[in-house]
Image (cartoon, rainbow, N blue to C red; front, side, top):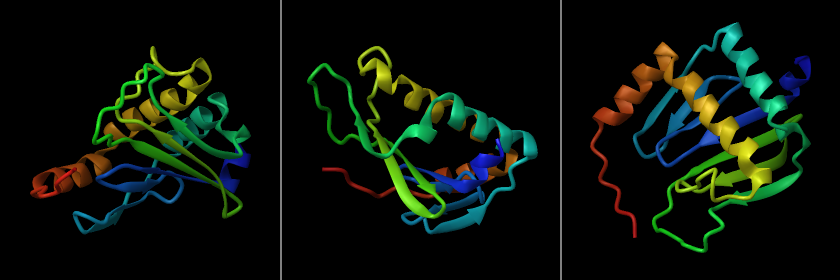
Length: 144
């Protein structure tokens, strides 16, 4: 798991970007910059998810959408940005409507990674406080 220190993973959505290594969380729209201290256990869980779901082997960009041919807009999803030794390696863009039963089987590990990382974050007390700050601000964005 020490190899995980060579990677920098950032989860991004329309509300915030969070770096899973440094704990830095930013929200351009809501004008919030903060950081979260992850426990050693949380960092180990991130690393385990990263390697168990084969994100290490990616090299290039992937877009994950349902294979049913239906497109719903706006599609506000998540992206997972992976850097290796501070060089851009891959970006996984996941549709907000991606359903594990409707995507290609080979993409399921990436949905699993994103889902389980969010579960870890939702149990982190510092993250809960920052999410409350974000949710308490009025969202005046208009999606076309």
